[in-house]
Length: 171
Image 1 (cartoon, one colour):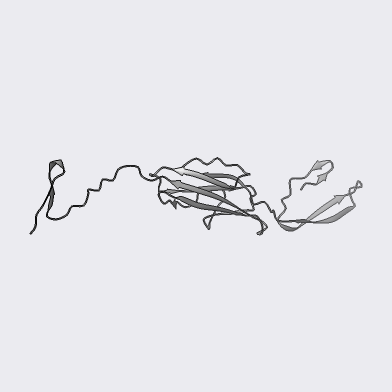
Image 2 (cartoon, helix red, strand yellow):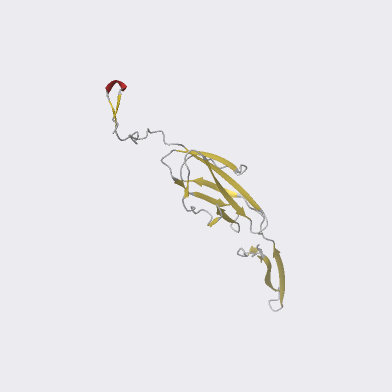
């Protein structure tokens, strides 16, 4: 909101949510006569619950403001991820898996289970407290493909011989 004085605009006047009272003082051409006018400007809270950015610490996520569901694959060596969500309107709030975070701030590490899609929910609530959007990230953590180094179990009293023969000792 700006006002003009003598053809020159005032500095911007920030409007808070709710009623804002602005007093304008006008001096007549005679330089003596002064009148004050009171303006009451009501600003409604924003209903914008959109994200302007969404990133994940591992894997590839390409954010599109028109998309609310994403799938990402990470290697078996990635045991957790963090999510960073930026809100479009500064009055909106954001949470990741129910934990509030600041806009543009990384969430706490979210543990991932191997071999399944791990669901992460990012919820944005508009300044009006009523409007919301949910963004879903499904992170698939690949299974470890390395062979197990665990030796086969042995049975007491048994021994393997070359050629696949086995000796069993009773006793």
